[in-house]
Image 1 (tube, rainbow, N blue to C red):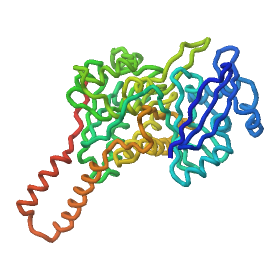
Image 2 (image 1 turned 45 degrees about the vertical axis):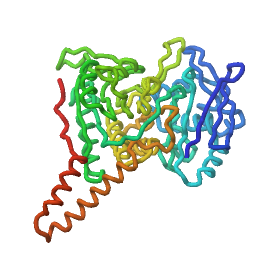
Image 3 (image 1 turned 90 degrees about the vertical axis):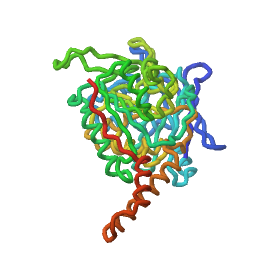
Amino acid sequence: MRFLVTTRRAANDDGWYIEITQGEWSRKRLLAQVLHPVSGRCFPLPPADERHDLDPLCAGNEPEELQQCHRRIVGNRDAEPDRIRAFGKYLFTCLIGSAVWQEIITRAGGDEIELALSWPSDEPYLQQLPWEVMHTGLGYLARGTEYNVSVSRVVSDGMAVPQALQRQPRLLFVVGCLLDDPKISPGAEYLGLMRALEVKLPGGTRGLQSRIIQSVSPDLLKQTVTEFRPDIVHFICHGRSGSLNLQHEPHDSRHGVEPLACDAARLTAALQGASGQVPLPLVVVLSACESGESKPRCWETAETTALAAALVQQGIPIVVGMGGKVGDEACRLFSRAFGTALLLGRPIAPASAAGRRSAGESPGPVDWIFPQLYLSSQVDSSFAPLAPDLLDTEKQIQTAISRYKVVLRNEPPLPPTFRLWRNATSIFAVRQIPSSPAY
C-alpha cells in the first residue's frame, strides 16, 4: 500500500509543510528549519512537541551536530551505530512521527507499506537526506524489522509511463573499470547476479539474455544499445555526485585511460542508440558511489541533482542510485536480490525492499541505506516490470518440461510431435551466453 509523502515550502520560507496521503486519508505536519552558519546547509526540525524523546544530537537547534552526523553517514566514515540510530530517529520524527506511524500501520492492515517521497526538483535540502535510515525507536523501517516497508523517491517532474515487458528481458551490464578492480569487483557482481538467477528463477536463466561491455565510450554504448536493445541496464563503475565514469580511474597504473565522466544528458543520449530512436530502458541500476546523492547549493558547493533523479527526468521510468560512498559487497547483495525479485514478477518497490534487506547482510554499518529507488510520477505502486502473461507462459513451459522429465525415466524416446513442440518452446526460452567483454 502506497503512502505518498509530499512537501512544499512554508509561506515565509522558514520550513516545510509535509502531507502524507493514502486514498482519502491524509495527515499534515509543519517542520521548522535550522541553518548551518558556516556551510549554509538547511536541516528540518521535527514539531516542537515531538522532540522530547530524541537524542540530544538531534533534539535542539544545533546544526553542527546534524551536519557532522549526516556527513559521516553519507561519506561512510566511522559512523557509530548509536549515532546512526539517533539520526534515523530524528528523520523518522521529522517526516512521520510515532502517532501518524501507528495510523499508517492500522490503515495498511498487514499489507506491505511503500513510503513514496515526492519532493519538488527544486527542494534540495530534503532530497539530500538519507530517509532510508529512518528508525522508529524499535527498528529501522526499511530493514523490515517490524513491518515490510519500502522507501521510494518519486520524481514529480518525471513523466515517463512504464510498460511491462512482453518478452524475456534483456540485461546489459556496463562496466566502467577493470573486471578485477578491488574497490568495485564488477566481475563478482555480474557473476553473482547471474548465478543467483540461475538458482532462483524457474528454469534458471532460460530466456534471459545478457551482455557485458567494459570501459566504454558513449559511441560504443550507443552501438551496443542499437544492436542489443536492452530492457534493463546495470552500470558498475566509479561515480561522483551527478556523473559516472565509464572508463578506468586514472590512478590505476595498469592502463593509461583517463576516466570519462558522463552526466544524465550524455547517458540518456547513449541509451537511445546511434539513431536516437531506440526506446529508453525500463530500468537502470547505478552501482556507483554518490549516483543517488543530491547536493544543495550552499556556501561550499554548487547544487547538484542526483544522477538517478536526473535520469528519471530524462525519461527513464525506474532508476536505482547509491546515496553515498557504498561498499562493493552491499552493491552485489542488493543487485542479486533486487534483480531476482524483479524477474520473479514482484512489483518494483517490494523488489527494492528485498534488495535492501539483503544488502543489510554486508559488514558495512550504513551500506544498506544507500540504494535509493527513483521512480517516474507515472509508476504505480503495483507496477511489475514483467507482464503476468509472460510469467504464466514461462511457468507453463517449465511445468510441462518437469512432467516430461518424470515420464522420461520409464518411457521410450520422444515422439516426433513432442520433439517439434519442445523445439518451438525453446525458441521462446532461448538462453544466450554472455558475450566477452569489449576492450
